[in-house]
Image (cartoon, rainbow, N blue to C red; front, top):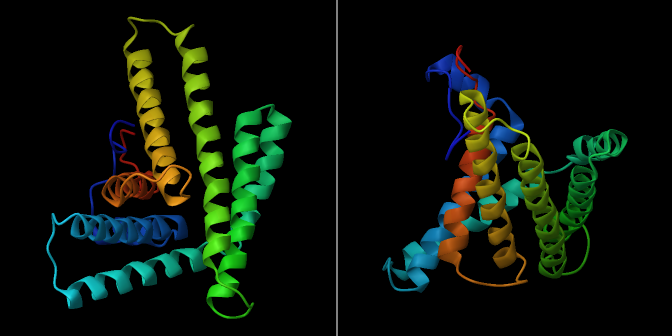
Length: 222
């Protein structure tokens, strides 16, 4: 799995329809859309993408709408993360268990913010959103550590001149790149270490497209 997932099925109406029918694939594409908006808003803020006030307002409104759609789409995702946490603990994969447990906490806070945003509960959603983003950033850091530790353990025993091992080494290294990109993005989103909407948006588009294509049907040779 290099820069993006490989060995994908040739696009056709049935294949693409099957892909888009998967909720997680759709959510990943929505995330790619809102990160594209973040990127363009960041370019505008730095003067590298001049826009009229009206066009900027439209882009900001689209960004907000896609963010809200993504937050709505995350409802009930705990039905996946809670049993996944338990399974990882049983398997002794404690990094994965920590990641899934933190993701569950993030989802709970995210739902709370969503209820505030639609005025079911009183209060501003932003403070809760920032808390949720700090939690998911820690979860992404745990995921990064897991990928690095897993690679080091595997690489210490893998054959150096084996073609299959070389392919797996490349896949594992790109997983580290993906996890790093996700963590750096989280540092900005959570305001733990703000850097740039341009960088954050670019990394967000990459990780979202990577995630979306991971759900795309694989070709016969995959």
